[in-house]
Image (cartoon, rainbow, N blue to C red):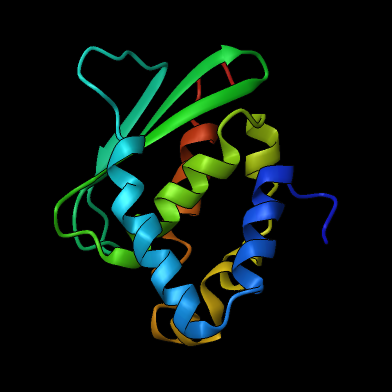
Length: 148
């Protein structure tokens, strides 16, 4: 157990590391199906919005950040229809496990937790795109004005 990681993220890592590969894939599919509930809703306002399509992703991804209790942030992620299942799963996992953290906690997160969640097989298959959402979230937090 890594005590430097946010508690909810560590719990997610522990859960996924305990699963055999076939159950891990099924759990990730279930996470992907929940991703839509972490999308912004009509009428919501945010302190920062970054919606774009990058070459690393198959469709548009939006990062929406609210600062409600400084230094804690809350964010939502919107995903285009063509976004891959693993990216959808990771968006739900990031939203579940990192909302309410400080921007600094998220910015300082090591990328090494992601393969611990997705497993070695999916990591090998998707190694180029697997870090996309975390990178986008960190970039967005660094663009906040004023900086957090």
